[in-house]
Length: 115
Image (tube, rainbow, N blue to C red; front, top):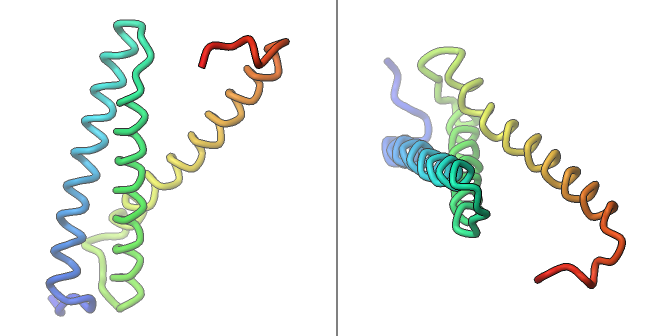
């Protein structure tokens, strides 16, 4: 197996950020599920979700750097599995923004809403 073009330090960071991606998504998903079951809105959930999304973006950036430097992935699915969380994040954020916009359009007086 040839050495990784980004060097062992970069590939080590890629591995640890990958673990952070798993952990932050598990934490946000668990918190979100509990909040949903209990029927209450949770501000910490959104902070956790944003942290998970940042971890995904960093992971994809490091992976793209490694590939650009000539590193090879263990198999063809590694890159697909690495990029798919970023694609899901972008699509879901677009859907969330669209749903929020539709909800706001139905409110007759925005100033009357609680802040």
